[in-house]
Length: 310
Image 1 (cartoon, one colour):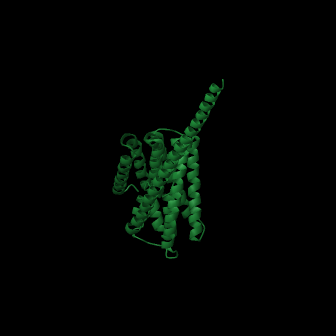
Image 2 (cartoon, one colour):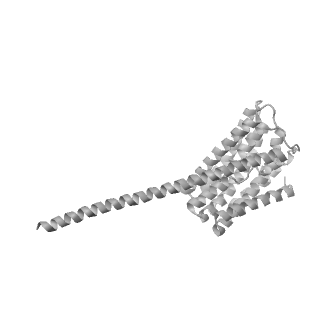
Image 3 (spheres, helix red, strand yellow):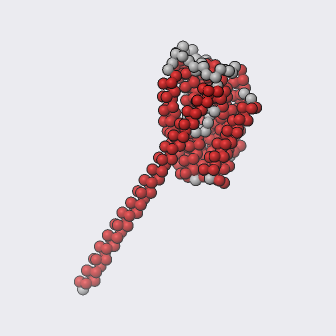
């Protein structure tokens, strides 16, 4: 009678050991998968941030070399939004990123109102010190931007029309408000009271950190709350705001205001980029979609420059 009990004990022990080894193997595979996914995510984020910083430096250089108008037309170059939508596509698929790009259109409209807030705060500030004047302008801009975003979140509307119309309306409004700004014709006119090169270096580093942070937040929002919130935060003024701040601290007021005059045109061109992402990502994938979208952005900037809508 002892033999069946002995055999059952051996089988039970073997079953327990096998189950333990299988659990350890599955856990190891899960950990390896998460680790590889995390490393790939960090690698993609690092590469795109390096590219993003390079583009931001290039845009600033073009502004210094060719004037305030060029700086304004390229001020909303889609670096942060492109990076956010790209990684959102990697994490959740092309269709998910396509939906997120639609809500980014409204985010761009909100950036238009940030630009207005910065303009109003800068031109109506009573502060004599340049640093205080720029800080006040930034605060006013971000307050107005936050109000617009909050109003959108309270009553979210999905669809191309609901998000595209606010961008077009905001462009028309800003065109009307900024029409009286006299353009600065000089190529480069700096404020000699400040160390421009040192401020630029700090600004580049700040943009890299801010841009990377915005990308991470946009991805977290997309994964947690859906494509709408990730998309709208991907259009955060992480490029426009630093450009206006650095110009306020290193260039004359006329140079800054001329740049502001052309920011809405740049945002409208970025809207073309977002619409292209919406259309191309599900059809061609994110790699071809990025290339097509960037080319259309450049074409849009060129057309807006020729039309002289401002």
